[in-house]
Amino acid sequence: MDDDTIVAVATAPGAGGIGIVRLSGPAATHVGSAITGKHLSPRHAHYCSFHDEQQQILDSGIALFFPGPNSFTGEDILELQAHGGPVILDLLLRECMRLGARQANPGEFSLRAYLNDKIDLTQAEAIADLIDSKTESAALNATRTLQGDFSKEIHTLVEKVTQLRILVEAAIDFPEEEIDFIKNEQVSSKLQSIVDSFENVETRARHGSVIQEGMKLVIAGKPNAGKSSLLNALSGQDVAIVTPIEGTTRDVLKELVHLDGMPLHIVDTAGLRDSNDEVEREGIRRAWNEIESADRVLLVIDATSSQSDNDLHLATVERDIPVTVVINKCDLTKQHTGIDSTPGNVTIHLSAKTGEGVELLRQHLKDCGGFSDSGEGHYSARRRHLLHLEEAKQHLLNGQTQLTDRGAGELLAEDLRMCQTSLGYITGAVSSDQLLGEIFSSFCIGK
Image (cartoon, rainbow, N blue to C red; front, top):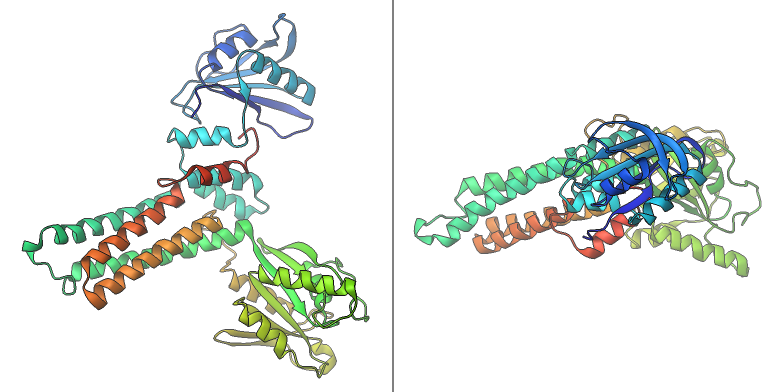
């Protein structure tokens, strides 16, 4: 980490009542004294004038000084709270840079806090998630993660895995003790307890991920099946053009919908069929591209049509994408609305035009995302957290197989080590420069 001092405007762009210029680094004390003409006492609010090099008053406001290591970044921090005009803040920014500071990179304040062990990686990401929160549930989950709740769960898992590694590796290193891995119930019971703990943490993290990042839902089907009508029904407004003419939708249409706080990224696509129209073929190609990256596909089928949709169903299933079959236009066939559910196969009968059965679909989508109306106990988790959790759990399950099927303590020990490494990637105990660069580059400049 550089020993230089960084500076940035920490408030949002535009005009406002208050604007904050923040500095972090060894020159913060010097910059504060030069601009305010005062000795700034730690953690005291000083009302004063801000001067430039010629002692011309730029503005008046509040100056706060937080000496390291008892600050957000672990370094000396200076905050100048001025009036929130862009010109004033730019003048202060330039004066700070003249006095030795440099413009901060995106997320560099949070990066320094992480590198100085003030926060871990999940807490750093939670800062960005809190700023980007679109719903109350997402904000509360981000706050919970920022306070360290998610990190504590991960550290607890690491501790349990470490304790088990000690037991297993001690048996390997001291064979004279003649510990039988197969008959040692202490090892087996601890291993199963850790697996159960993984399931609990993963469930809560997955829920938080859905709340924060949402679920990508692609509406697909043949022309005139009612895909656009279903998008309108789910969004509660006429966002898509609906006509009885086949092929009305020729490009993808994206809409963000919230189902009781769960973000749903809905993609309405062109009707899937063979076509000689070049524009329509391009729309169909884009539709399949969206399907490839979907978290779930709603395959809409016209209840009044005699044409088979088995080929479309097979095409989506072959791509290993979760599919919910929606039988639409039940109002025209006088069919009862409802949901038929068997393992791996869900069919919902509804009418997008009248709205009958749409609430069943909404509840089904929330269930698919593991969503509940209460955000209590969930975390602001990201997809990378879920991937590392799943990876760590898989190592654990592999080790369990080595223990029960082969009694191979050495292989179990190696799987436990790999499990611990995967967990370390979540909090940043194990990290790489590339990972840190990707995470902190998504932050705003002032964080």
